[in-house]
Length: 294
Length: 318
Image (cartoon, rainbow over all chains, first blue to last red; front, side):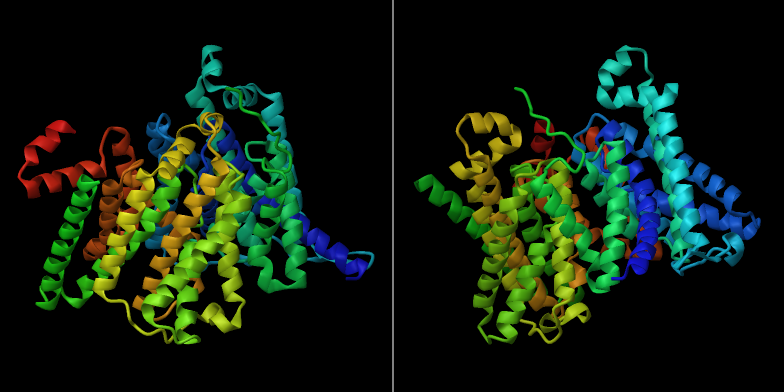
């Protein structure tokens, strides 16, 4: 592979990876706070993409308002799901919660399929101008750069929220020890809802970006990026926010380079890498090995 | 020992009686071809669910890739028959052994992982096996493998299911089975009592894979056509749903929930496309009801209570 080609693929990989990281952050935040693999997260991404699609086509909104409305809608959807389906099960065994999450996921997919049909749709062409940009000999386009920039901006915002605000402090406290946090006067219910709202809003943003990147959206669009982002979250060490970031970017890079080399294997390679990493380091890339005390 | 033989005799006699009744209904077309097919699918799903049950509910290891072993069993049984020309019972056995072997090889490195890491790794192996089959032209690739003879009959699936129930029933009652349960209850305590936890986890995984391979072989010779995407992780997730709804550590609940959940999509056909929406909705409602004390085992107890004429008692006991 020549250097120029390498750098071009690097940009593609980074922008794909940043989208994975956005989705993985939602998985990891929810896992960190209630210990649930939220299977419905991928479908919240789809809900966000649909909301964005409707405001962009029916009201002709441009990119930024579309993105913000999709984020708000997806965040609201996340909070409603948490309140209706997950909250009654919070004290139940973990696996019951997992099955409920799978049920919510199927409900959203099949429900949207029933309501809007399964035909793929596309965002209006003018929503993001696709201009080719040359950095010397390296060819790239505005689409990939805007996606990369948007994802990075949102992740910086998330860092600010988590480490610089009161609700972020409450989220960190609740994920460390729910009971102790409640004793310190933190409203655990509100904090969990806020976590779902933020994670889902990021997924909604990722939904808009993914459907512009692949120029297609349908009720089952969340599955592929969802499963890869989940792998990314575990890869980096689930429950850790920097882990989701690193895992997402690495997975995007690996996938882009492997696809350039052999496109048939791209469906499995993410998992091969994941399994190798986990067998060498069972708690993920950035995870710490916690020894259990009796 | 004599009470043991008595018990075994009674359960075998019950199985033969149920089989005779069902085959009579099938031969007189009271159960038509369509319902017979659903019945056979239920039996295959019960084999799968019980093998998953051993890993998830008895040993406490969350696997999201059990359908991979079904795929291995299905493909190897089909290939032994198509290329090797071996008789049907032998290919079923060979398919199961190959699946069990893969279960051992995959279980050995992955079962060191815990909880969600194990879940995602098994899911990954499932995906890798599906992609591998898609890329092997000799196995038909992504287009699938046609031309498998339709040798699976109702008798085959029924007695394979009975065999699975008996063998797995013995496994969980044996000292090895008790060791598996101790791993589920508390891995550290089990280890402190001198139980080699990895060994029993791998054992459960291998036995589970063997029976999933058996179900895969039966499935291949029932469908007469198999394709890799049938066995992706959605199938594994279905299996997890069956065993979780069945409840921890019992066969009756697992069998009831599998039968009900396999029939449910067929029953819901009356509402047309909406069934795809109603099924997950029911799933969520059942899960929330479960927390409030609803169990599939109670339905089973109620039904068996009706048969033995003690319908009222079982309710009071539960």
